[in-house]
Image 1 (cartoon, rainbow, N blue to C red):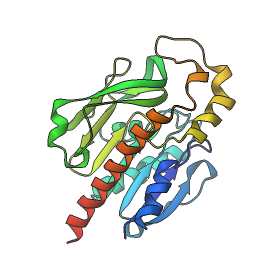
Image 2 (spheres, helix red, strand yellow):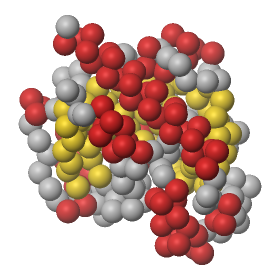
Image 3 (cartoon, helix red, strand yellow):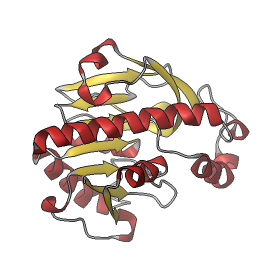
Image 4 (cartoon, rainbow, N blue to C red):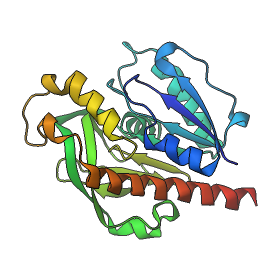
Length: 237
């Protein structure tokens, strides 16, 4: 059994399909809701860390002071060689911690947009079995510079850095493979009317009920998590 801990940064950005995978594989799952000032666990209490998204910027420590403690915790997890997956804000936090810069992009990228994988992805065990391209759900206005010693794994026309790896145990994803139709529907209902038009902003009505696209991103997510599981088992053996 793998002990998975996840950090939730926003009440709207929940586990989604990750919870389904964890249940299927019979792993344990614990959570720290940073926005509620909950206490993070000891490093000895988990094998894998997942950092979810949020509507704040990785650099907004003045407005969200708990980001300081979160960054210290993530840095320690990386140093302890824990398996780490960061999604959207989670990826941006990883990028900053590893020496990259996070900043507002020149445009927002919201909705379903094509992503292409880089040729180097074939050398990454954690991305084994993932196809050359996918259309994934995006919801971000920030981006990041690739950290030193990190490897770019995917990009899109609207955002150069869509996925990266660091060493053999850290993955950052700018897009949201964990989002279910239910999560996206909440985003559409609560935030859709506030989204301006833009080159990389899809109409909110087109975010929801995209079953074939959801199936593709769910498959990518399950493959990635299963690869994390396999690599962890190798280490334990």
